Amino acid sequence: MSRWRALQESDPAFDNPFLSPEFTITVGELRDAVQVAILYDGPEIVGFFPFERHPLGIGKPVATGLTDAQGLIHAKDIEIDARRLIKECGLAVYEFDHLVSGQPLLGRRHERHPSPIIDLRDGYEQYTAALKEHSGKTYKTTLAKSRKLQRDAGTLRHDFAITDLEPLRTLLGWKTDQYRRTGRTDRFAHRWIVELVERLLATQSESFAGVLDMVYVDDLPVAGHFGVRTRTTLAGWFPAYDTSFAKYSPGLIHHLAMAEQAAAAGIEVIDMGRGQKEYKDKLKNGELEVAEGRVATASAAAGVHWMMRVPARKTRATVMANPLLLKTADKALKTYGRFRTVIQR
Image 1 (cartoon, helix red, strand yellow):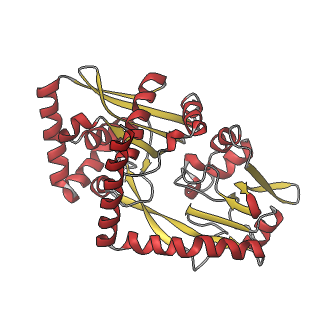
Image 2 (tube, rainbow, N blue to C red):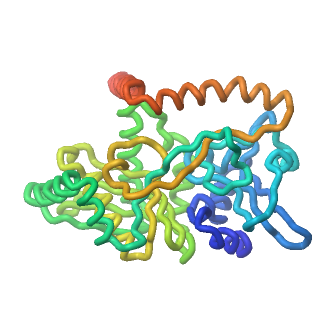
Image 3 (cartoon, one colour):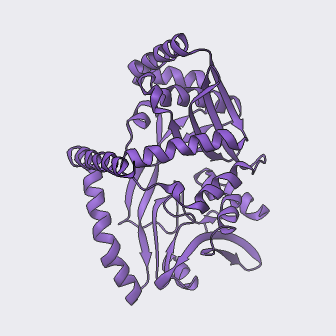
């Protein structure tokens, strides 16, 4: 694990907790599909390639569908043949949707997407100064709503980097309600994902930790977030809030409080992850880049995979790139979510 850590910390592109050894090890304890290829140059280890092996030789990132940073952790300037790598791993295809920059797996045809960040490298005060300049209305309105929330409901308190299970379960309950309300699949209906989050919360070290924080009003939980961090990067993962406080914009109140506490704790970047969300546009002051695509060998399994996945992915990309189509799709999902909620009741 020390060599993995050294390679990860040697390149800023790898400074994401989803690329940390602890994350892969913890997921591997819960999912038999997780494997790690170790790359050597003579006696020296020069890379680690974590992946999941699925039927028909299909390779996917560890905890596929959950992570916002994927790829190979490797020494600088080494030459790696991507197709040979996946073939040596016994894979026909390796598909990804959040591949980080500078990867030997990255090709010219792979689709690039922005991944918004809160850049705290110059401190929280500089961040809020930039926020006032580019999203001044959002910043002022959020502060005003925070004051109104306190007038209406009580004193505001923010607990950062706590490790109690009770507030975590409150947060996951909010998130489940959000998934159902918006027509999305409830990730926490899968027991292994709940256990993964609980185990990550219990993992606390200087170089990697689960981070839970909650905003309370008069000791009543209002909003919160669970993510994971390295020494200097916090990955935004599961933010949620109590919808009974929705008129106060508790998510924005929480994110500003989280950014302030994270900066004080030495966090330099909060990676909010790929995806078009209004709150990300309001809060971001920078962007990283991630890629989506696949590396494939010349095989029948790769051909079948292409027919099943690539056209659908391109259709989704078209929808995501068109504001009108995206708005229509999102509205349809929310309508389905309301209908499903009524049926369940």
